[in-house]
Image 1 (cartoon, one colour):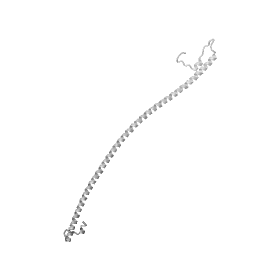
Image 2 (cartoon, rainbow, N blue to C red):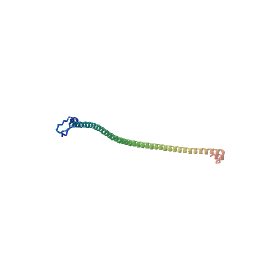
Image 3 (cartoon, rainbow, N blue to C red):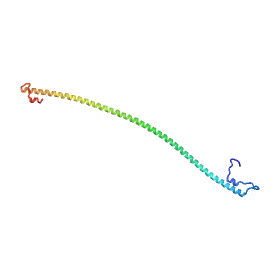
Image 4 (cartoon, rainbow, N blue to C red):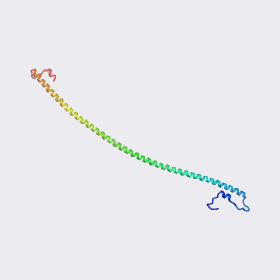
Amino acid sequence: MSDNTFHLTSHDVRAQEFQRAIRGCDPAQVDEFKNRVAEEIDRLLRERAQLDERIRNMSEQLKSYRDRERAMNEALVSAQQLRSEMQAQVDREREVSLREARAQAEQEVLGARQEADRILQEARSESQRLAHANEIARRQFHGYLASLRQLVERQLAEIEALSGEPGTPDPSLRRMV
């Protein structure tokens, strides 16, 4: 009975027989004790089975919780990676947009400068055309005045010739000139 692998069951206790000795124990008390020990072993075995079942359930729950924890950690790592990737993508897109905006602004500024240069060139051309037209009009005016003066002088000369006195024009005609 000193074997380490010895397992005592309630049936073993009930079936156990003892040799009778001259001054031995009261068989009724021994039977009653055997029954109490067997019932206690049955109770302990039932309790152990329940505890084993609880341990098995808790082990399954623990495994489930660990699986969930691992899944949540993986999801967290994935979310962090996704956030990093999205931030990098946003940074790249922002940089591209900024470069495009700068290029567009430079094009618009260049276009505005070219337009301003074109307008300025047109204004200079128009100014030169108007100055030339003004010069032509001034020359024509001076030519007209010279022609008018010649005409008036001829007319005065004719009036003097008709009046008979050379060099003394009619005073009323002098005021007209």
